[in-house]
Image 1 (cartoon, rainbow over the protein chains, first blue to last red):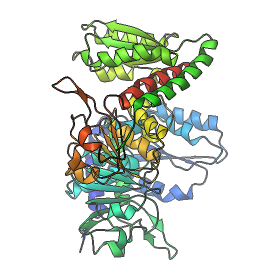
Image 2: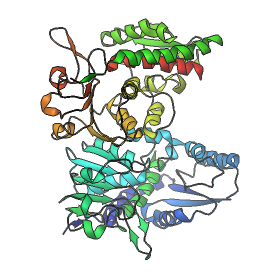
Image 3: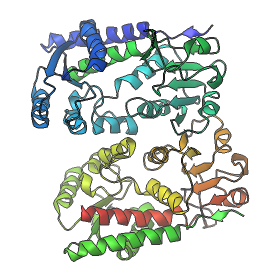
Image 4: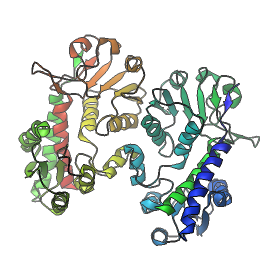
Length: 280
Length: 280
């Protein structure tokens, strides 16, 4: 029986930290506030946004919902982001993506002020992750993975970590964060020949390739720590991750459930970033 | 007998490319020029600087040697860098490091204008390497490794690449560049447990840990491609790399010599960046 790495106690600990920090800030008359920008109808991002709005008070933060019309022009969207950059009541800015196709997503992301860039949308924030420096904030999901590993006392130094997926929001920054904790990291991706040969040898395996239940028994060794970053809705309506949980659980030393694993921590972490931004 | 991956023909090809590009630019009355900033006495960097000065004309570029006093203040050094940023006759800026200890190296590096940052001293240039975007220029040494692999037609997609050394000037950016070409990369470092277990399995092995002749027969498999980024002077005065050449050469499919390998390419590449910067 694998240890179940539940996200709930990790999120609770982060919320407690966040709340304590927010209290000090609020005493100075500052209320940490996240602006959530939604351009047009973004059903993919709706549940993430809803979870942020619902959980913000538990972290001592507020949210401001900004719904902009689907037809907004690039110039107007840019002007509004610059206005939020200057708005002293706003401390974090989250732009829900993807954007409508007529907008230049890259240009709008880069326009976010670094000190309000709580989910690492800008190049400068990203450079901080790569260089191991504090510039802006790291992306919430890979930092959530790191917080889980830390909370459950999973040693990283000298360990063999394999990251499946090289996205700029999860895989690549996570590889850098694991390396910063002295793990030896292999970054696998869609063009990797025989990925199972790498994953079977991992001490710590992170699945972040975005393919439902792709990591089954054949990919796994024994007594591994398995962190599942994926979340998908199956045809029968149930949620699942990138890992085939039923096959992996009997083999693993520890494993995150989906739902109830990394996802729960991500929300708490993003809100902690908002509080940290307000305290800067 | 391993194929010898000599840097000379790669450097020659890059110089030819550079020269052709410079000709077009010079016809518009622009002479590509690199400012080399040397603060105080920097014997470590002297041979690199000398090689740049000597080779610049072959690449169609010029150099301007800026020797600033050891005792220069932070404010004065910063002011001079900002002046070079604005100087229309200067297209690239190279700050020789390390700096005298009283100076804030980080702040001076970040002050270099991105479009003149030909050796990736700024966070924004680094973010470009990480994100796979064109922002500033990539660091010259890892790009030199990539140019060598390309020149000698060494396939990377799906291959197992192991990088020894996680520095921000070589190891980390090189890992990202190899991954961008679809290699599966493992980044080893001083805290890696049993590095030889990784290196023996590599298709392509990059030694960039900065330890003379540390990679010997026990670390190697058969028929590997070995790229040696290290350069050290031994007690007997001879130069060597991070790889023990005499032990590695009989095992390898292909190997770079030291000297005469990557180093020669780095100079040509930095000068190409200067010409590219002038043409922007």
